Picture 1 (cartoon, protein in one colour):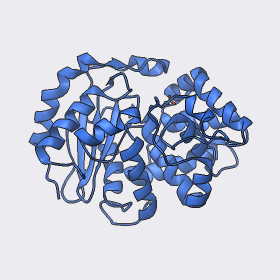
Picture 2 (cartoon, helix red, strand yellow):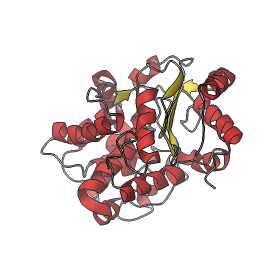
Picture 3 (tube, rainbow, N blue to C red):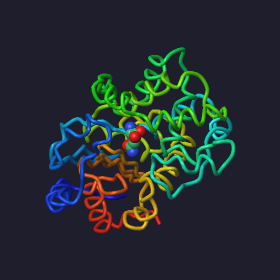
Picture 4 (cartoon, protein in one colour):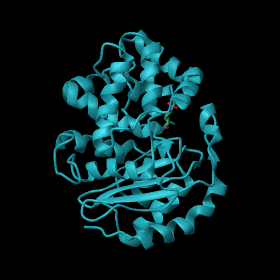
Length: 309
Ligand SMILES: NC(=O)CC[C@H](N)C(=O)O
C-alpha cells in the first residue's frame, strides 16, 4: 500500500512546474493550441481515504488518447478477447502514435496495438450502436461510471476541431477499410473517435478513473464491478507496454506503473491496490507526453518506490 500526502503532491508539482518551459502545447488539433502551457494540476484518488489534489484541479481538459483505454474496455466487454484481438494485435511499436508505417508490415493492415491511433480506430469501430450517437453514448456510459459523474461529456468544440483536421486518421481508416479491418462509414467512425478523444474532465475525475483500474475494475467506493477484472488487467498491461506511446519503455524504467497519456497533456497512472493518480500539464515533449506530468511522476515514483518491477 503506497501512501501519498497532500504535501507530496504540492511539493513535487511546485518542483517540476518550471519544466513546462521545455515543452510545446499540441497544435495539430487547432482547439488544443489554445491551452496555456503553465496550467498544471494533480490529483490522487486513494482506495482508502480521501481524494487529494494540488494545482488547478478543477480545470477541465480533454482526455484524448486516454479514451483509448476506455473504448478498449467497452469493446472487450461487448465482444470478448477473441473478437477484439482478431482486429488488433497486442504488440508495442516503436513508432509515433499517428504512424501509418506498420500497417503495411503485418498483413492485412492489422494494427499492432489498441493504443496507437490505427488500433484505437479499429477498436472504436467495434463499439455497438446503430449510429455514432449511440456509440458515443456507450463510451460515455462507462466513463460516467468510472468518474461517478453523470454530467461528464465531450467538448463539442474540440471534437469538431479535430474532426475537421483529422486527415491522417482518415487516411488510417481508409487504409484499414480497404483491407477489411474496419467496416462501415469512415466519417461516422471519425465522428465517434473525435468525440471520445474530446471527453472532458478534471484531474480529480481522471484520478477516479485510475482508481477503478487500481482496484482491478471495481468502484473504489462501493467495490461494485464496473469493469471485469480480466478486462481491467488487459487494459493495464497495454498501459505498461504502449500507454506512453513510443516512450513506454523509458517510462517503465523511470516510473514503472501502468499509465496512459493524451496529447492534451493529461496522464492517468495506476497504483495497484493503492489508488489512481492524474497529472495535467499541456506542454508536451517530442513524443507527445506532458513534460510536467513525466517529471512529476518520475520524482514521486522514485521517492515512494512505486515501480512494479
Ligand atoms: N496521442 C493522442 O492523444 C492522440 C489523440 C488525438 N485525438 C489524435 O487522434 O491524434
